[in-house]
Image (tube, rainbow, N blue to C red; front, side, top):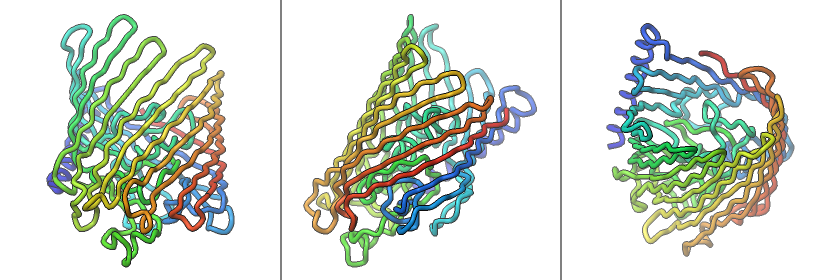
Length: 418
């Protein structure tokens, strides 16, 4: 099943590019864009989880001293076309220019590749189908091109995890109704290729970062005792491939959005329905489900408030050898004045270990984070941003259970093309 799904995805991408080529010659609705994000970062001394350690941020020091880094944090090719009024397709391909972190990663990888068909039922109702690889519609932050945020450099803990471990390879249908000042959207999806989702939350915990996981990507796990040859899970390598199909069974999600005159409310339930007793030789199946709800409020004077909450459970192994409840929420306030945007955000996150193996594999966690950003729109599709990030967490699995991460980032982001 996994090879069949991957072959289907490959066929979808080939068809997408064929359609894009036709669109370039015959239709004006072809768009090719590229997003580049260069960074200057000053970190604390803690090593990043992306370097196989316990740090909570995307960038970190060497374990002894802080670091000053210059990075190309994101390089994305964004393709889209409208072949007819009803049929459209788009793709995001990321090119990883950062130093190799000693994992067998693809330097060029797919983030999303989607074909979409919609038609009008009545003047106020529409139906849409989309299929391919796509991030479920959870985030109220990451609304800019390339699944980036107009509010900050670093995503919330909630949406950081969505970008890391949650991806749909399947089919979504949605029904929308538009009335006087109102719009309601109902959606549901069936998907494969997301059975290891939950691995990071259990063995690494929450993190705050803005890196998007590619379809063939590998993410490192920290060197905890449960993953050693003498530990509870000696077959688990020190990495997770979150977009694998382990048990050949589909998952699903369903959700609803309501928009009315500056107010947006959304809710979504996700369940990958993975068999927690399955192991495919590389990754375990994690039976992971969560519910998330959020609101976006537009207020006078270009002031906005965004809040989201996520709560879920993940189980893995015979007799629930890993059984965690997890949660995250954030509150974000932002104000835009002329070319300037100011944003502050508070995050709270945690993991509650419910299984009976805590002496060998303690996955409890409690933490919070604070972010402050100033963004300057230099000109159309050019922006400069400065951010301060503070993360504090208490996780007994670390030798230093209480850990603080601090980072300063300056970003210059360019979106060009047509």
